[in-house]
Length: 411
Image (cartoon, rainbow, N blue to C red; front, top):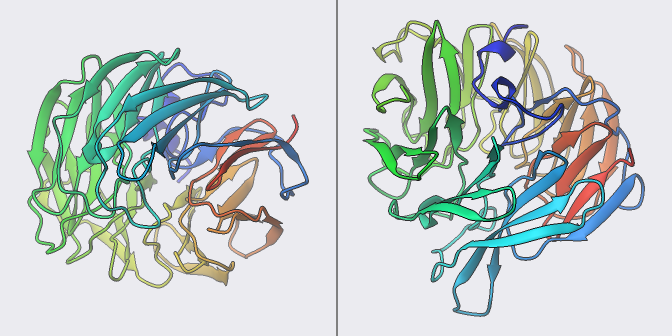
C-alpha cells in the first residue's frame, strides 16, 4: 500500500506551494498532508491564532493555495429573494478578507437538507484559477483576484437535498456528477472556456437516483480513469470522451457521498443509504460489468454514509455517521479495531504529521495514533456545529464551522 501516492491524478502532479490544500481532501484528493507541527491539542480558546465570521451558509471545506484561503458560501439577501453565491478569499496568516466575489444569483435554489445546502461542494484552486461548483445552480471559473472568467449554468437538474459533490480537474477537463432526482449524468467541461465537452448519462438500477459523490482520477497502466460512484453503481470513465470503462453494481445504494480512495491496487468506496457497505475493488484490467469478478471484499459493519475514508500503508480507516471508527486491513478487510468516538460525523478524516484527525458534527476533534491497536491521543472541544472537513498547513488546521473559520495553531 505504500505506493498509492504516485497513482493519484490530483494536485500533487501539478506545481503547488509546498503544503497547499487545493481541493476537497487535499493535494492527493485522499486526505493526506505533508505538513509538520500540526496541533494535537486545542479548544475554542486554546491554540486559536484567529477566528473570523463567515457570512451566509455553506458546508464546503476551506482550500488553501499560495498563502490564501478560499471558501464558497450562499448568502440569502432576504426572505424569498435571490441567493448570492460567493467565493471569499482570506489571508491565511491573519484571516483578513482580501476580496469577495459574487458568482451567481439564482432565484432560490430548491429545498436543502439540514446537513446540506447551496454551497456544499468544495472549490478547486490550480494554475491561477479557482473553480467554484454549485451543483445544479452552476459552475464558475475565476482568477486569483476574484475576476470571473466563465460561467456554466446550462446543466440544471432536479436536486434532492441541495448540492454536494465537488468536481475533479484532470488536465483541461473539469468533471463532476449530476446525480439528481432523475436522469443522472457525469459531465466534463472545458476548463478554459466552461463549454460542455461531453455528458454521459448514468444507466443505474437504483430506484433513488440522487447522490453527492466527488469523483477520483487515477492513472492505471497508462490509462486515466475517472472513478465516479453514484446510486446503484460505481463506474469508471475515460476523460477524453466520457466512455464508461467498467462498473460494479451495489444494489439500491443511493445518496452516495464518500469520495473513493485508492492504494495497493485496490479501490475503496462506500455504497450509500439505506445500508452502507465498504467495497474493495480491483480496477486494473476491468472492462464492462465486473461486479462478480473484481470485488475483493466487502464490509458493512461501521461503514460510513457520509465521511470519506483514509488509506495509510496497509490499513484503511473510516468512521460511520454514528461515530464508530474502524481500522481494517486494506488487503483483506479484516477488522483490527472499532471504537466509539462519540457524536455524529459528516466531515472526512485526514492524516497529517503522523496522526489521524477525525471531527464530529459538534466540532469535537479526535486525534488518533495510526496502527492496528486503537490509541486516542487527544479530544478537542471547539463547541460549534461543523460538517466541513479540515484543511492543513505547517503548524495549523483550518476549521470551518456554521458561523466561523478558525486557524488552529500559531505558527
